[in-house]
Image 1 (cartoon, rainbow, N blue to C red):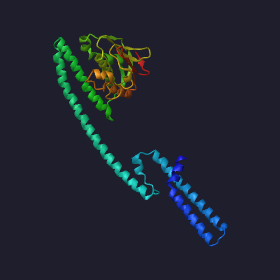
Image 2 (image 1 turned 90 degrees about the horizontal axis):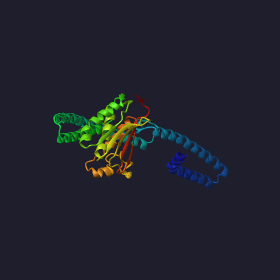
Image 3 (image 1 turned 60 degrees about the horizontal axis):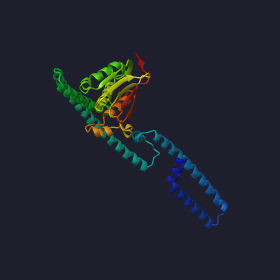
Image 4 (image 1 turned 120 degrees about the vertical axis):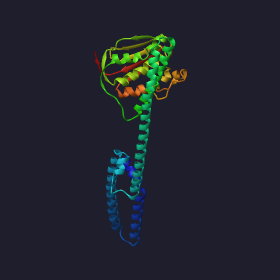
Length: 325
């Protein structure tokens, strides 16, 4: 009904013109002394014909309207409707030019993005070589300085991986490989990257074996767990980090750190948002939890955070129905 009233509004000038013609027609007949009966009958006949014509035209408009609701702009341009007016044909030609320009722009943007991803992929592979070399040199000696440098080196590796994760997640292409993986192995590999930091900062690790088989992507899930552990270490000055599975198969990573302010909890997964913790850590990027959220969404994992200032933070990963070993 709403569409019908809009249609009548669009035909308002035509309807007024028709009423004017009927009025002139009836007035001329009356001037010539023709009886009212001879005037009324043709007037009613003309009204009926006009209403029928409006109904037929509205039906065509309704069909086109419904089609357009299900089309994108390219489909609309592709329509070759012989019933359309000259103005509508002009619009269609302009839309066609616009679609062509947009397609060209999209192709150029895709090519630029692909070149950027290729460049950073090459950059990551190149920078990993000196990082691996530095790690070997530092592992050859055992001192407080070498351990601290290993911690810094691990952070550098994380930031490099974050660059690639960010670019890949923004791309329409991905390298997800879903297979059966042992959650225990994934967590253990993530923990190994931070063993020097646990030792030098005297942060206790309370880790219960998480015996569960997951259908997931090992690399991306390990990236998520590494980011969570990294954040726990970054904002835990003293105390411990606890990793365990609950009876429902949810993974919990808890710390006794500075916590997250209540007003920040709803925004911690936003890109670039650092909040209270970010104001303490001036170098915080606000991308870590954003990437975790995006990756978890792609892996069909629910991620949830509970936290309180000066009491600690708990990150929960819900894997859904998975098989326990």
